[in-house]
Image (cartoon, rainbow, N blue to C red; front, side, top):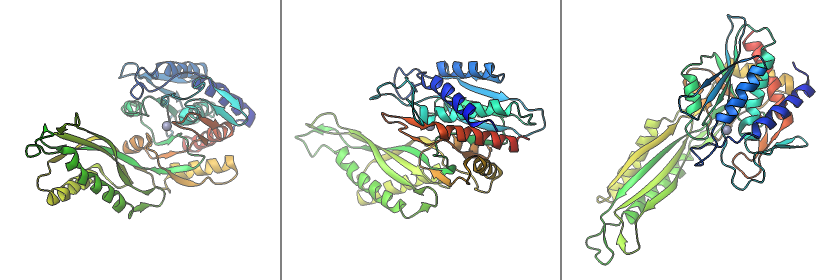
Length: 383
Ligand SMILES: [Zn+2]
């Protein structure tokens, strides 16, 4: 186990270096810097540390990096995964001017999730000198905050026997997170001059009962809960329709988001919305509405008794002095993609605050603890 002070210095040095690099996701914020500069820094750090580093860049300007500590052969491969992109920096004073205040390292991306990535990279470097049989691989992936291009690209080439995603979990071992589905309902009316009501069908008014039904469905979803994640939900997140006050609108589009629990599939969510629209049509035979599915991200759940979970918990207990809590995350993460590829996956990351907010900080001590827990896990899984 590497000494605490040495790891702390390394965490502050590498995390400051990565936070200083603008890596705002350009799909979220037009003109955002993207991941090219931070990927180059990860490659340089890895090669300086004597590790292999490969760049994957199927989408130009959106590279991911695969860093590998090669084992002697015959052992199992542990994948550690963290994303390099961040959300935007609106309202922040010095988003890319990292500074340390006591236990806090402050700056955009420090918490979500450059600290987790730093823990993974430092653990990989430590694993390289442990004489392990298996490989420890770090995937520093692009675009988690938007379409997860990076992790999907990595999973086309990287094989692993277990994975740990180091998103911030407040030192909980996270074994489940919700999924989500973005759908929309288009209600069709008939355009007409506002003075000629006998010719017009108001698509916005016709959408009213659909919105009421969405609220009722959300209330009904509260009846089913997951022990770690609570309830699923549905809400209307966007509405669009009409062109001026003096006309009957021909079209109204309602965007909805459904947050799903493990076991709830995309097909079920689509059928649920179709049933909702059928009930609205039964009440109003003139309603013309159709639904579309825009994006589906699956929920994630791993058996709490899975080996990677038990090993990580035992390793973290050795570092923290007590067994960490097992919990669920309300947010979605790349863990779902990795688990869907057949790799038993769990999440552990540091505490902090302000993922997507104007002041973002991460606990340096927690990041050290995660680093040491990852090294101990690798030592057991990849022996
Ligand atoms: Zn994140």
